[in-house]
Length: 428
Image 1 (tube, rainbow, N blue to C red):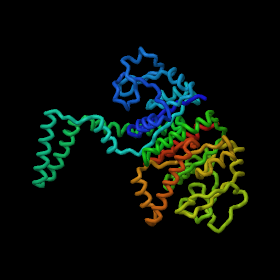
Image 2: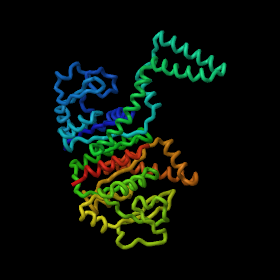
Image 3: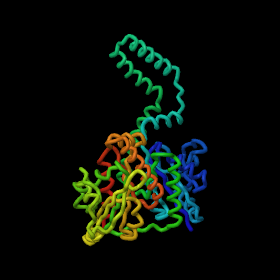
């Protein structure tokens, strides 16, 4: 049995190195050989330093931040043939494409997503780059602090504002890495934009939004899946997208967009629910029939959602005859369900199924604030928060079955763009 090459990528501070080190320490996989002309940062660094990449045996060369890097694919293939799994951290999408082309089904690209703010970046920058100001910088900062202190005591508020502006400029000069922090924040957004533009390139997404150890659990789930299922199955067109998501992730927003802008490209499968009608039902193909009414016979694919300790559960249904009709018309289609229906979906429609998880890129604090702002009572908000954690756990346990993750950011356009790119990717 051969091994696999797992390529970790993600924005700065997303958790790539943390995950890689945990995988290596626990013996789940090996570190793939990667070389660089830059000096090693220590035992946790993922590169081996060499003086001249061009004179090495590396057959893949690339440049990051002005430093040359290299990969020797023969060394990787030797380990794969021995049955070893390898992990490598890469940020250059061209290199990722080349490795996937070189190793075909043996290479899996994994994107790590995390809600990151500038505070996180600043902490990492401070740790990496010690602050040792020069005597000139100390003198300049001391002068600005004294001016600011005097102006505030005299309540000369216009002067305080002037001093603050000059102090910030002086502070940035004394802390060159503060400028790097700003650049990194911009690059994080740029990196996410690259994910949106290249969503089909990635085989899996590891969500780093709760506890760090959950990253390793997701990675191990992926590793174990490919040990049991070494051959990747190709999708049959037209595909059927099944979307799963927690409360507040943006399901209605996505389906409304497809209804308005994508109806000529994709069909929204009608879905019935044994519940009362809501204001946003019209935008996602939802037909509420009330809790007391029965589903029509043609709505034969039925399941229950929101059932658990905090919820009684709601029954939903779609019509397999409608899905079959869309297949006959050679048109891709989409509907909202839950991850508990993945195996059922595979049995019904096999390789036509494409499973999508929709995730809102909020921090834990932002998620809680969102639920409290959008629920009528504190009790309802807490129930929704509990459900979100349950759905997140389901994703972790079923990560290998999810084909793509739509990351719903503060920009609605990000969500639309990802879905339309997937529709284009799975065209006949």
